[in-house]
Image (tube, rainbow, N blue to C red; front, side, top):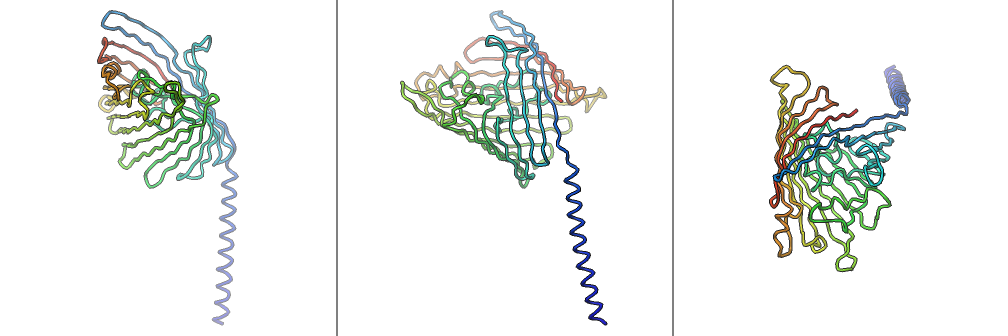
Length: 372
């Protein structure tokens, strides 16, 4: 009798296990059937009023709808999707004025939180603003000077990447088109060397590595390193200029306090190809506080302060030391950022830009921006 009971118990257990597996498979099939392919549209834009006056009394004032950007994405499945971004700058494109650019257009395979793959027109992971540059996400009517001359925001090109998050660290590795070294200069660094995906020369690709961590609530700390052999010419001979960009960044937001800082350095292996310049260097610090934490005013009212120090010719291997001081500038700005809702921002700022060799420029800027 006991052996019969034991046999019946084993059969029942087997039936329950098989039924459970079948039910689990059925639930998995049901869950996957819930997903429906879908498309989404988003975007951002910003209008700026910029007024400046130098020590000699020369002044200017401009009103410009600087950027109008549309995002389009489509998800075929939970893992496969497409993302894109088209940008129109300065209202129109005609006779060399304005810009129309495809800044992103890539297929994304998101296998899991630990691993994903992208291929197409990409943004390399450099600094805090290159990938996330919507107007409500940074202080100031204009992007920081650092994000123009040290990190050439917005930087994009053709390539592929892998990304993910493992044990509290976010990583991304990008291999993409390189930079055109013939367009490097002491005044603008590597900015003019961007190929922007137009029939780009892929002979010397660029490798970009980034690592961030969020171990403390409200704090992001990380850095990136980008390296390539930039094709160039020197004395009529074709060469490659080993070029790298290393940067560190940190951002903290908690209890109404906002603190952001970035430091970066560009290094050239062939200074003679960049008029003896061997490196460019810069940093900035932002500090702001949300008055909404003290006063019941609704939305976010954040007064802030920025200090920047940028030199696109920070060191040379030549005897002309004037080139260093000629390209060194410091800047301070004070501003107010008002966000009635998180996707809309009104901005104003006032400040002074002080070249080491040159006249001080006073600026006053106002702007409105949005994202959706």
